[in-house]
Length: 280
Image (cartoon, rainbow, N blue to C red):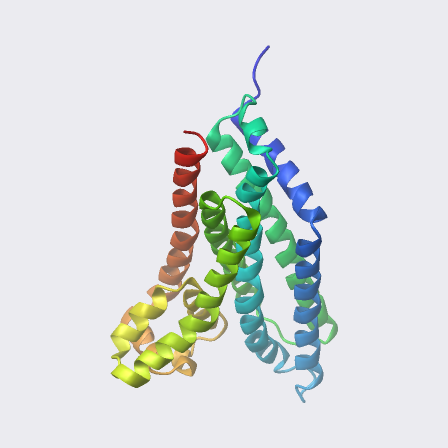
């Protein structure tokens, strides 16, 4: 009997993972909360813009960027942290690996299913935002809105990559969740506050400030979204002016490339740990 192809196996595993994710209570709650908050911010911004929605999207985008910075990485981290650790804790990992599938097929299927679930949640939220902006007749730049959506998807995939990396090294779900929450806290809060404190204490030069900011995928996302939504990066202060003068039109491609790196590297490390530990 002919064995199924790699694509068929990965697709079947991805569908299984997607179905399991959509049945998970925490994932549904996070998705609903993101959709409601995004829709609420958009509605409030357009209602109180004062010019029949003239500044609606600009005001909504400012709030949406901060909302996505808080919620989206957490969703990706938790989703990724539960995947491999959950299989170990339920004692299903050994059974799955006893089937005629390779470690790469299993890993890719799990990640693809979770990525699809996160993408569906985000696209639904952005769909609600787009519908509300249309109903309020707020002027909307389709390219900017599409870029904002794409960058947020990359941010979710980066969070997922970190979560899977944590899960590949954790033995239990509770341990993986704890580490994921700690990483989220460091990236969201200590990233901003740590850089600000360092600037105040050490009088850090703008070049060093930009370098340390680019080491945090959330800061890369913030820079990229502002660059896509507004060509005037002076709203970010000296760092924004500096990066605009140095990189110019290369800024957005560079930031997108950095986000892609923040997706690929954690996933590659996670797969290496998974093969070394679970497949040994």
